[in-house]
Figure 1: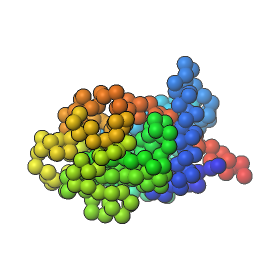
Figure 2: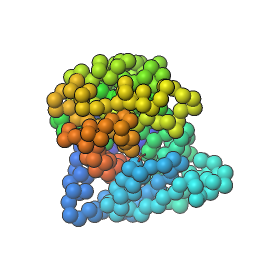
Figure 3: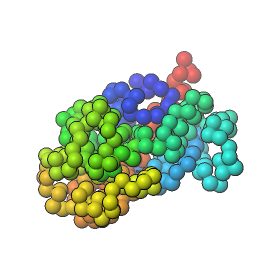
Length: 312
Ligand code: CP
């Protein structure tokens, strides 16, 4: 099987079979990163460039390590320290990277749709590492990988996603992906942080986290994205935490064996208490490991696809 597109821009456009295939491939990749010798020839002769216009620790480092573990040549560009700071456009920057023989460009950008614009102007495969408030598909894939690994299957899972839904590209990608895979998604957050159109995605929307969490198999808390707020959307962080923060008491509403997830970075004491973040049911650290496996799978599948097509 091959992925249909040369690019991975979002889960909205991916078929359920493609998601399943990526997760199956990531399972194989996880054996490699948990082995003593993290080196495979899967990407030998390929070159990967990460192009980040926003800060990142997890996503950027996991793509860099994924490409190194699979023996590719890799390089990194950020908006500061490159010709982007001199005013070069996204398309000109992308074409410059493309003309150096790059096979995959991994981009994070504050504008929704920037990876789509880039993908239409370069021969390289483009992977969306987060665009504005639109999608963060590789995060949702690693989240689904973690849920499937721990719970056996995604179909029928009850997943509660809590907090700043409005600004969250992680929430949007998870909603597209999880509903496609047959999971039931419940959302809860302050009314000002719930986008009005979100119910059309198939997710259920609640105004209290109690309603969303009842009998949940997975509870995913989201980072409060203060940096994206143009005006105050709730009274104070303390008040937000009081009504929508996850603590040990609220955790009782979910199933006894519910997984606790967070995409990171975590604001301890805001979205969840340290006691919840470090609870035995928390898989926040495993999400990080699984992020490397999923990104290895994507780099492999997208570069293999190009080779296969060229051979035909
Ligand atoms: N979850 C996530 O995207 O984290 P980073 O911003 O550290 O990449």
